[in-house]
Length: 92
Length: 10
Image: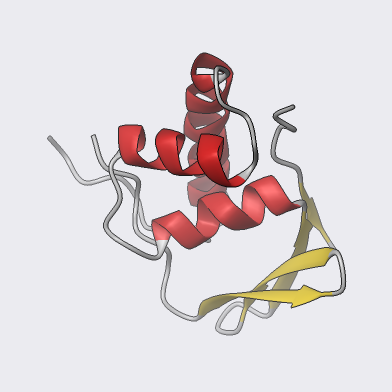
């Protein structure tokens, strides 16, 4: 399973320790924490769920917490889709 | 420690 692709026109912006997702087409702004920003960045590529889990565990210093990360990634990308920040999942 | 993602519309 791959992560859904980021919607066009949505960009990540960091100001200091704050992260924002800017929907330049819909005009909406979301403040997110680093975890959500990193997950969104992975949606901008062509990343598998397992690849995303491994990447986040390494980048966020959370080795050994893969089960929690996997559940959080799945919840987060679903939320991104509901907010229009990611494309709908393609039928399998 | 892993911190769960948070998203807030502003």
